Length: 590
Image 1 (cartoon, rainbow, N blue to C red):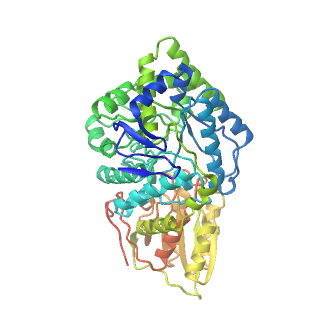
Image 2: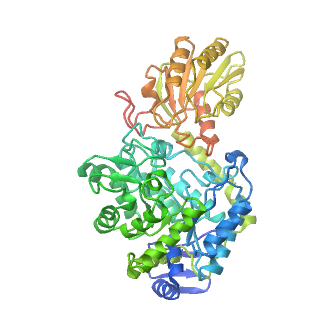
């Protein structure tokens, strides 16, 4: 199948084993191009293809206010990484607007064409819930993946992949770090949670396949992560090195199937996990393990695409090995691209450590060339070779703000909202005479405004006021909430947690429930909140915020939640089990 992408290139979607692709200048043989390119590269340029650089982190506000262009310091750093160190790929963490992002990515590609022997960049980002993860003011935002699964329809996953790819290409991205193929079997998992499609490997497999197809059929590399599975961890690898101790049978029967399904669907990349898998290699995390990356992933599962590490500046790696040593270990284990996301010094250390390892023979020339050829062939497949055209900044916003994209996201969000419990509390009626208390710890003012529009009457807002990252109300705050609830006729409590629900929110829910007023609880993050407040008279799961609640708001989900509260018939189904009473697939309607 041939298709055109927004940036002007046209290429094959059938896999990197195809021997030709198409550009504006005619058919180019992939093997000839890759071999000629490798032959003409210096060792430094080859090493550059194995390293993914990133902008220097700046102390900027959260995305609602951080729409400006990269700073001069960031621009200077990226130009140096690309032109002096020959970085073959970059990952973008900046928040921006569509035109600004497209212009920045266009500049990066121009530097690469000048300094990398005419080989363009992979420009990547975490786009788990749409390009809005990087362009929150304009691009389409989708529910988190658990919400996608709650629709019960793989078409939702395909459409998210498709629309995200279209908007990504328009703003200069060609590589997305999604889907999350982890099976979230641990309710207390502090890092995956609603980023996962759920607790059943069959659902995660089918949703991952669909999202990969939607993305790659429309020109953007998809990346199942975090191999071989991050769904049963107790620690966040951004901060701790985690070990999973399940047996080999559990690994093969629960955690690997979504990755195998992703590979069978044609995924051209996979991201590693900074997690020790005791059943395979009890000594080092998967990212640094030859048994995992070469033995299991390459040889046993037959994956032929790009292996990219997770961010190497995460504490699980950096605190134990450091940037340079870890980069060499990962390449020797079988990784193709090192995600060098640390400080400028850590990034340059990565390039230099790999180059020094090559010069002393620790990394062989044959091993280096194997990864470079693999990278080049997939760049060729996606049109990233001679004849490549950059994004058009003037066109970017038109693509990211398309009404049909917003309409599809709204449809998916509405289908995701899951009513788990309802003791004849909901729906609330629109009534100008009734007063509603809207309480919680995250985005409460935004939610209150929606309730005010939908429900009529007065709305009283109780906001913990410290932001969702400090979400444990004190006894004094709870007393204040109770006092405000005395003035209300009905109560909406929005809970948020990234792991276990904080004790303060549990006590707040219990105290409000005792008042005997009509009350519904809505989880903004994990649906597992119900396990902590099983007596909730009505409970709705929205799956709208993950462990980074300040990163990108999800108003499309909030709109859907409020519509359900005031009468729209819910159709979502639980992708996870909540205690003994609410199994996977459970979902009420009016």
